[in-house]
Amino acid sequence: MVASVAQTVEYVESSQMYTSNYLRSSKAVGVLWGVFTFCFAIIDVVVFIQPQWIGDSVESKGTGYFGLWKHCSLVQGGQEIICKGQLEDFSTILNPAFRAATVFVGLSVVVILLCICSMLFFFFFSSSTVFHICGWLQLFSGKLPTTSTPVLTYMFSFFLTIEIA
Image (cartoon, rainbow, N blue to C red; front, top):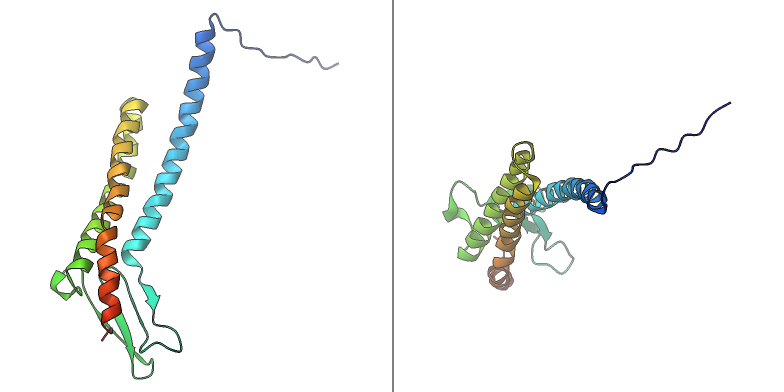
């Protein structure tokens, strides 16, 4: 014969129940925050290093691609790729708008990676302190690419007036 024993937790006060629920919820929020921070970091890094294709249509004058700091074009019928722009030498980046956008997005990458590293503070400080630190770092990291939006608008209007060489 199997005896069914229902385990119930009895609270002395209702505030203990709310505290228990709050702690359980805060741990779940912390885990989700960490997962979403990691996803944002991946997106941020990809935006920084991955070029986007442009000019790959029948009507385009030439084919090639560009990113924030590097632009490439195909020559000799698509047999050879010539790339210009290096992070080590900012003078090789197309114009000041590209340079500014590169700096803003690069700083965003650094700040979000710093935020991921600061999540290790959960082992040393209270969760409230870590949430505040990570929240401010994420706000700053999210604001940097947003700040570069007017710069990117200028950059694309510049890009439409020139042909990638």
